[in-house]
Amino acid sequence: MLTSSAYGLAIVLDLFVLFIGARFLFQPIPAATGYGVPARQHGDAAYLTVKGGRDTTFGIMGLALLAFAGLEAEAWFMLVVALVPLGDTLIVLRNGGTKAVAFGIHFATAVVVLLSAALLFAA
Image: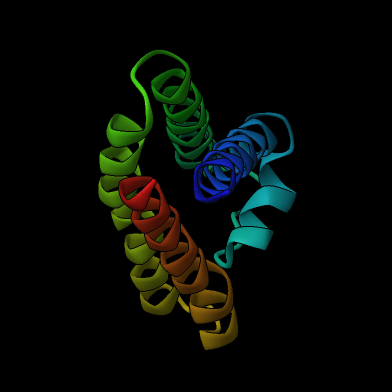
């Protein structure tokens, strides 16, 4: 049961971050607004593309680790990658975003990713 939950949560998180990356690549302006720091209509293309590429890569990497390296590798990956939403929390706060988005989306995501890492280590 614990192993199924650990795998399930990890897969959902990996797919979710893959979706976020794709959204930044294909619908960059709405994605940036959802992130909490709206982008200018013209001028933030590099930021949006980098964010999309980073998140897409993290999603694929997480799925690849689960498929080819196993639970422990995915647990370490989740533990390290939790730094990303923690950093995103600070980015939103430092760039005029709301506390609700910073903590309700990004910080909460970091907590869920850390929970996933704990489940993976325990499984």
